[in-house]
Image (cartoon, rainbow, N blue to C red; front, side, top):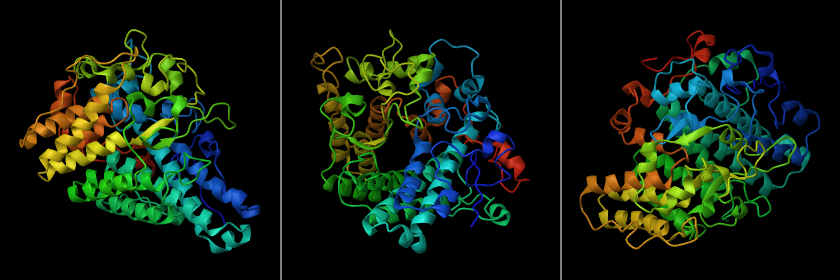
Length: 494
């Protein structure tokens, strides 16, 4: 059975894939249909799931080779989320290099900007891989032929369903209505049939349906695989369910799901704020719920390539971000060192040793417990439980002020005092907005937060950016709109 496959846009359309020859090469790490059809093994099937993770990596050149024009040299979260916000700028010393990033920063971009092609390509490539993995693992004939046991089959399916949900979560929050592809495409007619955007409500329904299947398939353990601790766990599924509810303002559901996650007793705040990012403590800390496992020295490469552009002068804090921290907050120094131009949270250590290393082994953190607690605090505030909302905000502040300083001392008395009792919903929300910014800086959360709070225009305009109402959604990559002959429509204003 032939499966239509494209590497650049992955599962959406042949016609949207572009015509450069390199786009038709199999991306690094892909398990192809031919491998499964010719000589399937249990390892082939589980490897199809493993390859589905890869589009969340910060590894360089997963799609093409140094294709800056396509925006695919690395995954563009830091551009479309952090640089677009008021937290990050392109470089420590502004210059004309990769001007498309500056256009995202100042909202002067148009629909051909490669940032959007890049994130679209990575996400749909991820969707394509998960669709293939799900198709293989759902095929009773293939499963019987390879002899994969039921527990491994179910767990692998659970991982694939979670990953597909995650890629669609990123697509719907960036672009709104998007095409939904749920199976490998076998004919050109099928490709044309899916070349249509569906309402975002349907995308959210699909995300939640996939997460429900993932939740039922995964074991009730902190690590679904004790030897490969990086694999998706039930805790990660519940957390993404809660985040989906948060983005849809289903406050009671957020509280219920976070309570369920807490009942597992798998997670807690680390005593030291930096432990979540410390390369030497990966999968031994209490806080990280979902991370991509970068490893050095692998073939194909699986290192954290984002450390390379950090060595080239890319990605720097704005003055606005630095000034957002309260006096003596230890989190600032653990996030960024201005004097040495080191972003420790992205480098995975406090020395800058990984800076410039295109194969660094530090992980990419996607969900951690502090983030989840602040979701619950937001939901509690929205439902009128002000006391418990403030209590959770103060838990985050308490951990921050009791974290040893980066020099090994303690923060001065009076640092980050507890927020006082209040029944002022707006005041508590302002505390929450502040706490999320400094707690989660450079973790690709700020821009989406500003958008869902409907604060983006106010905050970013005050920061000197040209944010317009249309920018609450990014443009669909114009190349895909054009190649679909208008079947894929453009977002309003672009």
